[in-house]
Image (cartoon, rainbow over all chains, first blue to last red):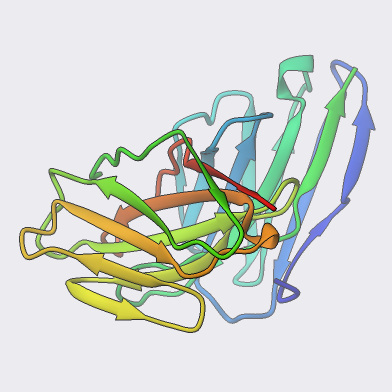
Amino acid sequence: DADVTQTPRNRITKTGKRIMLECSQTKGHDRMYWYRQDPGLGLRLIYYSFDVKDINKGEISDGYSVSRQAQAKFSLSLESAIPNQTALYFCATSDFSGADTQYFGPGTRLTVL
Amino acid sequence: LAKTTQPISMDSYEGQEVNITCSHNNIATNDYITWYQQFPSQGPRFIIQGYKTKVTNEVASLFIPADRKSSTLSLPRVSLSDTAVYYCLVALSRRALTFGSGTRLQVQP
């Protein structure tokens, strides 16, 4: 969905480095999410934010932190990257209505050497 | 959060109708049922959503029985481009979604 953008799209980094993945949306949604996906597996929720002041841990938040700079921006940081954080990372947004339909960005492919 | 169970994989041929069933035995009264489609290296894409009975859009139909403990995604006359992973989720608006492993649909020519 072009209304949800992620930068960078691809990133190769080394163990121990700090890295930030950024997500921006123009959909005007209050809710934003970060997921990771490992090859052949489903998506796992890292962090989610229901508004600028409401940030919650997901099922695999260890080793990650987030910042909700504005309604439209939600960043994911790996404080000290390790190889098992190599994965595809997706950002998503949703609005506060009914069934929380989520709209996903194109993904960031992260490789930690 | 309601747990869902769906087949790991399914195979079909072009032009056939495909039905993927999802079990959600502990669905709550206010939960909606949503299906997403994911192609390799892309984010999941919303397909269809429903609360009860039947919902149809230009892509698929969703059948939900009266007890709402299961739902069936129906894809009419699939093509090769329907090869993807399909996820069934149930969620109330204040809860974050959890994606399972989904159903991997392979459409053969």
